[in-house]
Image 1 (tube, rainbow, N blue to C red):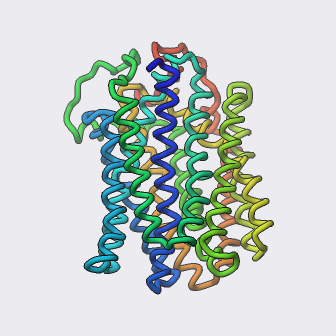
Image 2: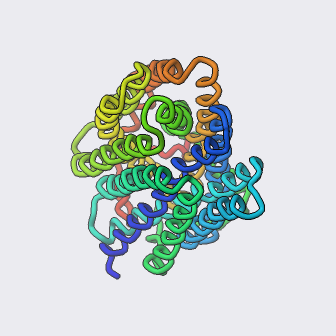
Length: 426
């Protein structure tokens, strides 16, 4: 396969794997509700599903560098498939106690972040070999993530409504299996381009020292400290919305799982178009101002409409606006990360950045469920909307946020621009 087809294969694997993740987030809350669970129980299940994402990101990056990027992608999807198929099998045979459901959901998400980190590390080299600018390649990669929401959310919602949440999880397990096979067949033999940045030739100093080096890089980089803090808060609020509040809103105000799938799919479809479109203009627009405007729009409308208790047409309209704006966020952050992170430690730093940014997600789902029981779903939506808008305006304060803009630098052998003022050298 030539470089263009390898890159397309990488994007296809990402779409299929993330489609399985999206379908899981749709089906699991309705498994809980179908068993008589409360809003708080939904929040607890969301906590169990998201805390392994943080743990896998924090501790899995170094293992990905040692185990191999393609093998990590394949293994992560196989684990997800095995744990998901175990849920309906247990429920239909010996029984599925609540603790077993939580354990299986936890194990299913534990290797998701390492698998995606492995795929992300392969992106710059494949993009360079295919002659595609970095920011466009990152835009396409993030568009594939959004496209998976467009595919997975409506399909999962319809499937849950038609056959129930347990059969839907069995189908989702097959989707993860397909992603593993696709990666094993089409990405076998893909290698990362040789790194030329400082320190690239340093041998491994052991698991904990390698992990510590990645952690020191994240802590010392002034921009990444701000990014992690901002995205940690917004991801916490997004998790409250997506894993607890939206399923509850769909169950109580809209038409159940089908409406949840349509709403999530609409947001994902708009975000897919936003990522795709932004990939072609990303290198021409200022990053920081664009980032702020799009971030505010990504949260405000989609949170304000449910806070007012409005129906499905209003919710869908807000999702179109917010989703399209959200499509620009990850391409900007992804390009900044690839420019600033030394290529030899990308897997571990990607994992650590993901862990730091996603550390609030488990608490977000739990908070959303508990708050919905205490003050109501619409009241919780209103609080989340106000906090989200205030927080996403913070990059306008300047300071180290200005480092988000393109820095004068020479391109390395892989076509990735490396920042002249690397935080490691401070």
